[in-house]
Length: 254
Ligand SMILES: C[S@@+](CC[C@H](N)C(=O)[O-])C[C@H]1O[C@@H](n2cnc3c(N)ncnc32)[C@H](O)[C@@H]1O
Image (cartoon, rainbow, N blue to C red; front, top):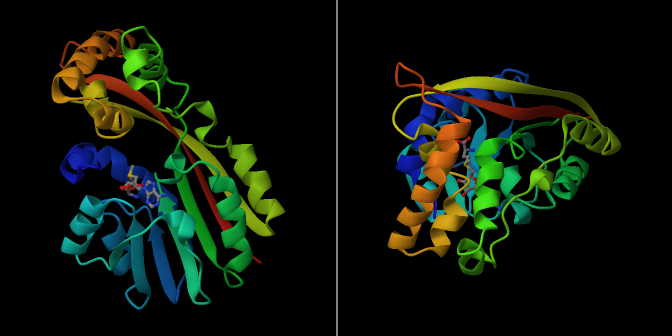
């Protein structure tokens, strides 16, 4: 289950890559704009301001996220982006921080490029931190006796959840697009106790949370907290540095 309030608790850090992505999408007057994996819609609505004459729609598989997006006035529907098919007026496709949840998304990207109109834009951002301690320590704990038996059916995302920047560049060029690819590591400064644990609880740990009873979940968090605190020590002023790599591309059909 996605929890919109938990997800928005680090809103500023999560919003910045979206605006860095959108800054490179130079569409002037798109007919239709779609946000795939829109989440709570707080970022989607900014596209209505940028392109007031476009038909803006959004989809997400989480009913809670779609409900939060609708409350912000977004034309959002519960749907799986793997089923989404571009129509002839779709001039801009945005997917921010969602495709890392979708195995096989490179094939989808190539298909979309083949179906979009000429000179359409596809803007994508995915986290590129699956090798970082924040993810590696979770995989390590899940593989330990005690947790392994309880969480065995779970398939956690590995380092192959996304492509490297060159992978996306080759993919989109192969799909007949012009492409602009880059990566950024944001040095995020988080407030509060167990800040990295709180961050991952809103995203990467959700599949684990869903498998465990409340008590087991607290036990899992207690086991993970000191490992994360060692990898990301809290500073004397109470803040914690949490470096976060993200991969971006903007492709344009010819
Ligand atoms: C990390 S949130 C990002 C939300 C928003 N794009 C943002 O930047 O704030 C990822 C979202 O992707 C959605 N999602 C994951 N897999 C999906 C799929 N197959 N189809 C549609 N949405 C999906 C999740 O429900 C979640 O709301």
